[in-house]
Image (tube, rainbow, N blue to C red; front, side, top):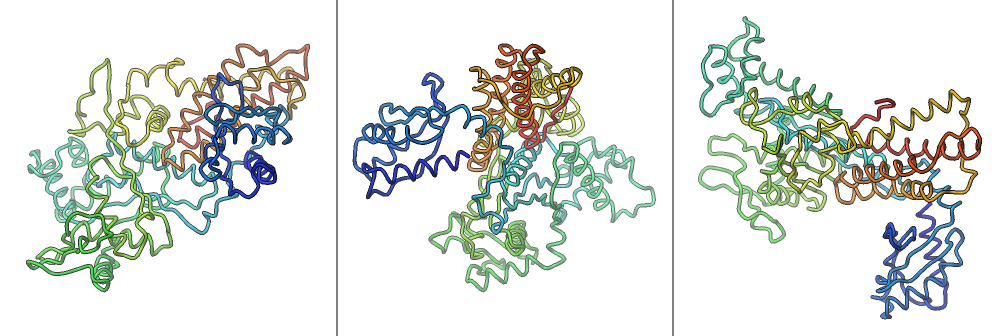
Amino acid sequence: MLEQLKKNIIIKLSSAEFFKGFELPNVEFAAAPAHTGADLSLNWAMAAAKTMRTNPLQIAREACKVLREITFISDAEAVAPGFINLKLENPFIIKMASDRRIKDSKNESGSHPILIEFVSANPTGPLHVASGRGASLGDSLVKIHRALGYACDSEYYVNDAGNQAELLALSIKARKEGKEPPENGYHGSYLIDLAKRMPDDLPEEQYGRWAMEELIKTQQQDMKDFHVDFTRWFRESDLHKEQAPKKALETLGAKGYTYEKEGAVWFGSTQDNEAQDDKDRVLVRKDGRPTYFLADIAYHKNKYDRGYTTLIDILGADHHGYVPRMKAAVHALGHEENTFVPIIHQLVHLTEHGEQVKMSKRAGRFITLRELMDEVGTDVCRFFFASRTPNAHMLFDMDLAKKRTNENPVFYVQYVHARIHSIFKAAAEKGITDYSGITTPLSPQERALLLKLIWFKQILRNCVADLSPHHLTTYLVELAGLFHAFYDNCRVLDEHNLEQTKSRLFICERVAERIKKGLEFIGVSAPEEM
C-alpha cells in the first residue's frame, strides 16, 4: 500500500500546475524523526530541485499544498532545507498494518535467478566460528530474497579435490599410530576421535577419502543444527569428473586469454584494460596439474551455465585478493563483472569476562561452531551474527549471549512473542477468540506499533539492497521495544471493554506474526512460552 501511495503522490504532483513540464523523481519514504510528530518523511523536493532548478524548500511548500488533498494524508509540512513530513490518517495505517503480504510483485527476479554460495569450508576439519558468521549471513539473505519473490538458491562448494585428501590421510594415519601429524598437516585433536572410529580393515590408500567423507557429514550436521539448509552441496570432484577445468581453459583460450610461459599455462587478465586484476595468474602448472584458480573459474562458469545470472559469493576475511582475479575471470568468460557479487565478512572475536576466548582444545587454532552452539545456543548465535554488517569486525560477548534478561536482544525479542501467546491463551480462557480488526480509537502506543509494522517489507528490501540482515535485527529490537511500551500503558484484556480488547488482541496478533516471520528469516526460533 505504500507503493500505491507513492504512485498517487507522483500522479497528483505531475498534474499540479507548479510541476507541469518537469521530469519528476520517484518518491521514496523514510520514517520521520520522532521529534517531528510525523509518520513519513520525503527528501523528494531536494531531488526535484536538481531538474527544476528551484529552491527545494519552495518546492516542498508547493508539494505540500498538493499532498494535503490526497486521501489518507491528514497533513503535510515543509521543513528546511526541503524535507516533506507527512501525517497519515489512522484508517490508512490500520489497513497497511493489516496487510500480511510480503512478496514484492514489482520485481522481475523470476527470470533472473540468483545463486548465493557460502561457507564452502575445506572438508579437513570442523567448522569454525567464522564459518558460522558466513553461514548465518548467507542463509538469511537467501530466505529474505525468497520472501520478496526472488528466485534464489544456496550452495556449499565442497573442496574435495587436490592434495588435501593426501595431507588428511597422512595426518589421520599419524593419529592412528599415536604420533603427531606432519608439520603441514592437520593438528586438531578431532582427528584422534576420528582415527578411533576408522574401520580396522580400511586400506591405507583410503584413509584420506574416508576421513574427508566423515568430516563432510560432520559439517552437514553442523549446518543442519545451525538451521541452515542448502539447495545443493556441490563437489569440486564432480567438476573434475566432467573435465570442467579443461573446458573452462579451452573457453578462455578461444577468447585469447591464455598463454604459455616457463612450461605453465597462464591467465592473461592484465591484457584487458577492463580487468581488475593486477597480475597474470597460473592456470595449469608445469607438471600439468590445474591450479585451484582454474577449478574456481570452472565452478563459476558452471554456475552461469546452469542459468544463474547473479552469483553472490560470501567469502572469509582472508579473501580480499581473490576478488579482483575472479572478477577478471568472469569478464573473460563473457559476463558482466557486476553479475559476480563478492561479500567479505570480517572476523569474529569471542570475549568472556572482558577477555578474548583462547583457542579450542579440540580444534587447535580456532573455536568450532559446534562449541559455540553448545555454549550459548543456536538462536543466540544466529541473532548475534545477523546483528552486524558483514564488513564490520565482530566482538561476540559470551557473557551477554548467556543472559536471559532484556539486556540480551534475542531474549528481548523472543519474550515479546511468548508474552503475546500467553495473552492469547488468557483471552481464549475468557472465551475471546475472534479479533479480526480494529474498531476503537488508537492510543499513541497502539499507533506507534502499527506504524512500525508497515515498515517490515521495506526493511527486507533494505537487507537485499545492502546484502546484510542487520536491518532486520535492528527492526525486531525496535518493534519489541514499542510492544513493551504498549503493554505497559495499554491494558489488553478488559472484560468491561470487549471492543477495545478485541482491537488490542488484533494488534498483538500482527506484532507476533511480524516477530515470528522476522526471526524465521534470520534462523531464530519464536517460542510461544519462555
